[in-house]
Image (cartoon, rainbow, N blue to C red; front, side, top):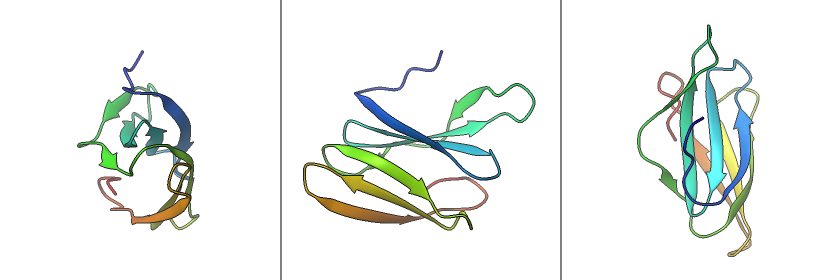
Length: 87
């Protein structure tokens, strides 16, 4: 079990299965995925989005992540660091 924090909403895994991105509460949590065991390890601090992030999509090139935020009716775009998975 991995504690997620406040109101987890959606999880997305990048195409290479290196990182998992979890929208929750007021941000996005990032986890590295161990290739052998599948274990998750938290990467850095949560990325703030404002209240209510929901849908989270990673483009196939792994360069951008898109997040919709219900409460503000906005779509956010984040550049992804290919090495660390951070936004």
